[in-house]
Amino acid sequence: MNRRFTLITLALTATLAFFLGLVVGGPLTPAPMASASTTETAAAARRGPVPALGVVNFADVVGRVNAAVVNIDATSRGRHHLPAWHPPLDPFKSPDRGTPRDQQRDPPRRGAGSGFIIDSAGLILTNNHVVEGAERLTVKLSDGRSLHARIIGTDPDTDIALIKVESPTPLPAAPLGDSSSLRVGEWVCAIGNPLAYEHSVTVGVVSYVGRKLWDPALDEYIQTDAAINFGNSGGPLINARGEVIGINAAISSRATSIGFAVPINQATAVLPQLKARGHVSRGYMGVKLKELDPDLERSLKLGHVEGALVEDVTEGSPGDRAGIRTYDVIQGVDDRKVETDDDLIRTVSAKEPGSIARLRLLRDGHPQTIAVKLAERPTKPSGDDVVPSSQRDGGARTQPVPIGLTVRELDKDTIGRLGIPRKISGVLITQVELLSPAYDGEIERGSVVMEINRARVSSVEDYRRLTGATRPGDPLTFYLYVPSGGRHQLATIQVEGQ
Picture 1: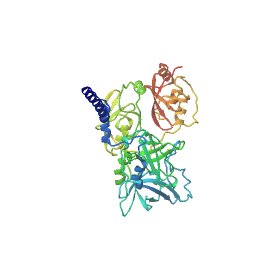
Picture 2: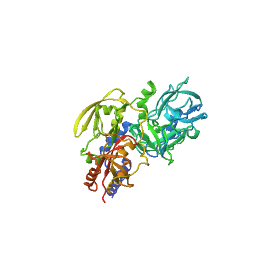
Picture 3: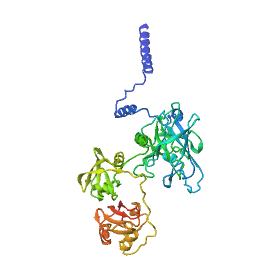
Picture 4: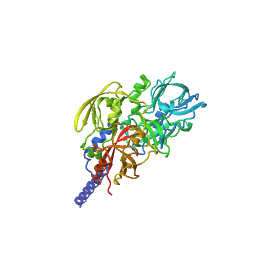
């Protein structure tokens, strides 16, 4: 009996010990296996911590940067309107851009904006449109002091300005980040002085990266839904790490949640020139580019290629003198590869005017190298004009419904009235149907069709032959001359069914 009792006791003790082991040791689950995501996590850790959704403490972020944000008052005696903003472009406008007043008997004017200190010696970044035309600049610091500022340099093309104040003591500076690593959906906050409410903070996300507003050649605006209002111009857009990644510059006139900021990398790239020269010089070739897409590649029989397609060459420009032609695909500059239009623009703009750029390009499928001596890029490139509505229709017509164009022969009266150069030949577009492929392709009434898929168009009969042989879904690339702007244009459309 004692022996049986002893065995039962030992069994109960072993069972109890087993369950206690489970509690102490944890669940019986296998150890996690290493995977590719482990490498990604390690790489992310090396880049620095990215706060997760809902974890970002913007109170800490603002606490580190707020002292470097300043209020800027710009005043003028009124001899000139202040400021001389970019031409209005609806629906976009800058938070501080207004309608210029009559220059005669113009009373003294005062504008307000924001800025942020980038070094302890008193250098401040802001927007060009905040200080443009100002005769007196006053900067109010976060500690309440007001100091006079002077302009060190401005860059109207990117709406950036560098100003400086003199302070007997070092000033707090905002840390600058890397806007090239910015991702859509990332948390950001804006600090500024909207409507004179100093050091106001708003929070949102990055809505888009690389938005084009005024100048497609240089614009790379960051779009955000963080509230940006009048007076926010020039203030910092800040990421969750407390780094400035943009300069708040513009808002949409049609919405309250669409704002735009100049990427900080664009500002830091021109800082050396602003400090040394007071302005920015950029290389310039004088070519207009067209983005390559599958339809354009197929219609021009290019195959799949990377590079920047030349749409037009300005007469007398460096590109014209070097022999660059329409349809050339520029694939490299010196030792740098060109994959897109933006690659080419950035590479050429970064070079000094007067320097030589060696272009690697494809012409009719054959590689070539061309040397171009760059000029200085014009400060404000001319925009596209609207074709005058007074242009009359007349003469022989043809209107292929699947395309949406009505064209007629060019006559001497039309050539003289529109100022079309003698070397231009083709057929005149007299009508563009709404909601047609031509309308979607932004082909303008009053333009001259010179080529279709690189085949010359000398008459209406040529036009009918080239368009009549197409089938629904075929791409057509039109080489056009636009008299209103004195420029050439490539437009690609897809033929629709009857």
